[in-house]
Image (cartoon, rainbow, N blue to C red):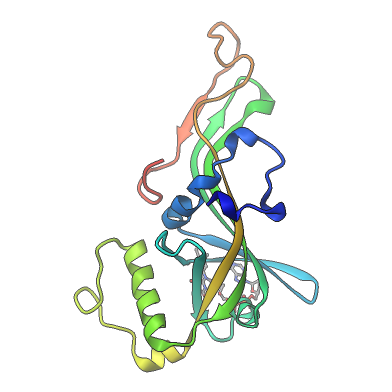
Length: 199
Ligand SMILES: Cc1cc2nc3c(=O)[nH]c(=O)nc-3n(C[C@H](O)[C@H](O)[C@H](O)COP(=O)(O)OP(=O)(O)OC[C@H]3O[C@@H](n4cnc5c(N)ncnc54)[C@H](O)[C@@H]3O)c2cc1C
């Protein structure tokens, strides 16, 4: 994924948290994409579920109803910025400035287009269900979407042009956190496991 870095995705702070090579892994684990786009100069950021597989690392998919402004804008080839974040822990320190979060996150830039082919749409939606609900399969655990349902659903492919990934792991890093005699308390409140997979 390193080759997908560009000027838009160049980190400017905390270079120690640069994990660009893990961007695809994080996208495959994430649950919610915050999708940013502009219409007439007005920025919008909308939360969405999504489909992503490292087998096709430069493609991310969204779906929804035809009236959606977000999806209609992307169908017209609109530029988009997608952010996926996994919060792993709340870090508290003996110093105000060193309170932090453990996280894994990706910011991806790209451009949308509508997926027209109904077989591809159905396959993408089934893959998306299996990503969120591991092991569920069409025809066994649920019935396939009908032609009419597929027709009323917009599926958008985002061609990822560049992306970055950052992560923070570990405990508090304040100047007094390793000093047991210093006043105050420090540690990490782990975020519940289960949704995002191993850290
Ligand atoms: C975790 C999560 C996953 C979702 N997954 C999907 C998905 O896969 N597909 C899908 O179509 N929708 C999904 N949604 C709903 C999505 O966020 C939009 O609400 C939805 O796309 C409807 O958009 P719209 O056409 O009404 O609004 P748009 O035309 O996109 O927006 C119109 C206005 O409605 C308001 N608005 C829209 N969405 C929200 C929101 N979520 N919260 C608060 N205000 C909002 C904003 O002011 C926005 O400017 C998801 C929401 C959440 C929270």
